Length: 193
Image (cartoon, rainbow, N blue to C red):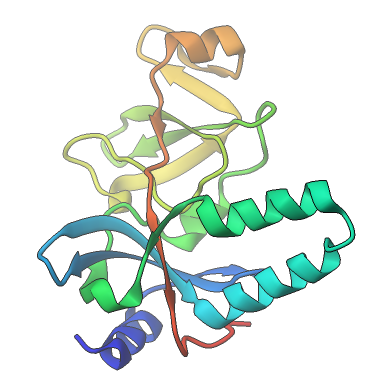
């Protein structure tokens, strides 16, 4: 695919996560030119990222300790992928529909959001994430289309069933979690606002 074909695919086939800071963020799987397959890639506007960085650098130029931290986050955090490495993109099996994502509410405890996913077959699975909601691991044999209900702020174990969140309960439960991903900043993707 050319970059124009990738842009067209994103706009026509991928429901973006909208963000007032980053614009539209498209969650896909990608094949790289060297044949590498990456199941979790977020593609967003390169222009918006540059504008955000410049704005943040300007806002904090008189605050050296904060300035350094912000520069560090733009320069050396996250896993980034250059647009010229993309061969093609496709729907990611780990990108849940935005409607499902909106049913996950609040931070359950400092730095952790717990929720339980109920599948069409009646099984339940505990989930949790620190801060990333882009992609989620799935139990073997399931896809996001098997999900019928999400209950926020609770845990599930086969021994105790669904229960209110507690740190002790979390220690006894091995939740499915968010999946790591690469971010690719695409030229001329548009603001998405």
